[in-house]
Image 1 (cartoon, rainbow, N blue to C red):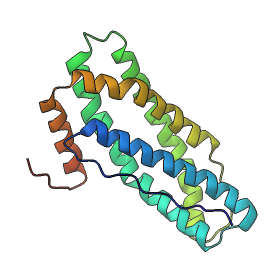
Image 2 (image 1 turned 30 degrees about the vertical axis):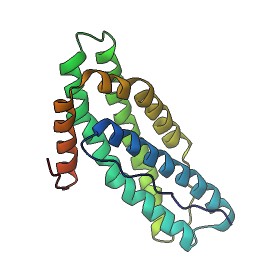
Image 3 (image 1 turned 180 degrees about the vertical axis):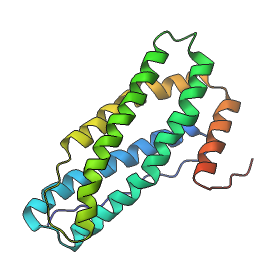
Image 4 (image 1 turned 90 degrees about the vertical axis):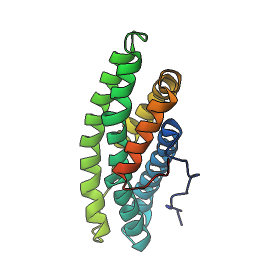
Length: 178
């Protein structure tokens, strides 16, 4: 039997938004692992209860936390970073534009995977092709981990980071004590 469950990661506070985004990356990678295991599981076992439950978990994650993550970056982190460091980091605008374009591609890839997952949650056995979706996410996360998050840590003040964290919490309807 193939294990197709996800593992939990440590909880991080919203007062450290770059750490929160890093933790989200870990969770996204776990969901990508689950998708790949699910695809292999379907070939051997078909759309059994375990497959249906895994499909539901992945759907729930990418339809909520995954979308929040993109909004955190697009609405809060990227604009703050552009404002704080675009003149000091010559390649920053190019990096942010590239990451935004990747978000568009990843959303389109997600929609294709999502349609299959919806069918699987209903017990409809069908092949799940994850390669393009998971490689887009893995490559994107690698760029953000290697380039974006270090720049954010370097250029954003503690006050800017706190403001970003508060917006991230509000997006999730989490009340944060300041």
